Image (tube, rainbow, N blue to C red):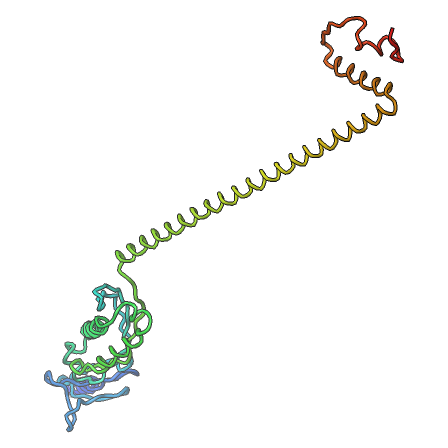
Length: 294
């Protein structure tokens, strides 16, 4: 009898324990009974807020789902603009469960991975529709925020999934790798052509400057030579005048100086050979310091 009582108490404890469930903070729970979501009299699903709750053991099954705003970040995808040009766009979505009953049924029992996969497809379809109506310039510059707002309006409520899309954001917009490489090669060719043109212009300017400098140097040299010839002529004229004045004042001294100059020039080399008569005028001052003729 005692053992039976212990067994009854143990079974009662197990039943009581299995009839209790706890919903954590940030979650909401629904109860599924015989494969159907339990609802209130109005037809809405019965939601269990965070806290301690009771259920019918072995009949009711509790499904807890995250009621907070969640972030869906997928991989970058390829989109086509109205110009038939490809763009690689990376986006993210903020979403939350609005209808827990629909969410549970549409996602195979509240499977978050399946829900995000379905939501990502719908978001991409919405973005594809918006981007397909715009050019690259519109998307990159002026209408990027408009694209996100239009996509958000279309996806604000995904009724068939029981999900509310809170926000849609485009993180990055890139060109495909092959297009980026082509653009880089074209830009490189353009910059190379510009650099080649600048170098050509530089060489042309250098030639112009060099020719101008050469012309100025030639003119300066010609002017210097002209001035030198003029000064030399003036000097020779002045020397001739001085010699003439000296000759007028003292013809004998002038003859002496001229003879000395002739001697200096004649014997400057040291190896000069001259054949002259002994009574030549050349030896006049060698024979006599006064230049007396004998």
